[in-house]
Length: 412
Image 1 (tube, rainbow, N blue to C red):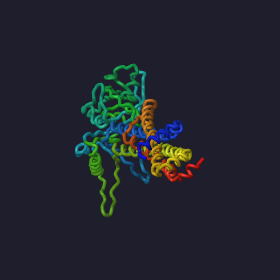
Image 2: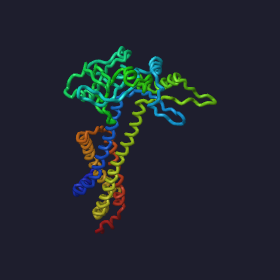
Image 3: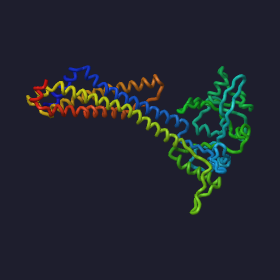
Image 4: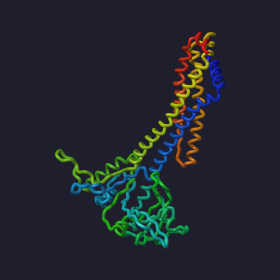
């Protein structure tokens, strides 16, 4: 019996029990749709986080004071004073893998203008900070090197601060606002960046010269941090090694000898690459978890196919006996039932693919969740569902092929 005839017989058998065939394929449909939708959500979230990190500066390097032990008690790193302006100047002058570098000091407080006020954070930085954090001045201008030298009381406001202080939509450029009790002249407004993947408002800030924060707000002579940007992402590790060597030399930290271990760093260096790697690992794990949970429904769908094929073999025992008595071989009976199982799984897989894509877009627009549908997820889910259909259809088909023709004809 040729394949064409077997295919026609399988089609007729499926068409003879439309509702049962649909319910059998429904498990596969739901399984494939779930896998595609869940993987789309996982991949979409992963890409969204990577984009957010990239917008923050994918090759950004952050240097902070390291925690220290005093009297056997580990001190909070934020209270340490190990980073100095001399460190910033040494790194700026001696490194060859950095494209930009900025000191960093900050203070939280209340901005006041007229009857309006809002809590926010002032960041003391230099001109390179905008390049490092990929910020742009939308209106007005950036403070100058002269403003830094004179510790000028000028500021650039984020959009959230502007909206809270000037709710009537007035132009803030040239206005004088107070941060706590210190007056600042607004010289610019930053372009909005919105919320990042961690839910933080990237527009709720103000930038001022770092010397202004150090002298007029905090009255300190040390830095709370140094932000850098490597020339390329690939050069980040080399830049970190270079910075570490410079800081160890500046801080007179001893290297390891035969008798003495090396002094611990009194600073910490972190890069966005580390954060991106950590977030990627987390999202990959989440994607695998979502895909695995959805994949269980595919397994259930396969069991449903096996169950219905068992029922079909039992119902058609006499038909199988008649076919074998007129010359059908065991391999023909096996092929017939395998084709039926494959058709159910393939049809369910195709419907499931379209339903999965549709469900992913419904989730995107209804729940405002990022999605990203990859071709490999469609091919994989479709291939797995076809394999599962044939795998679970094999045993009932094998049982049908081994039936004794005479016993099968007598079966009631």
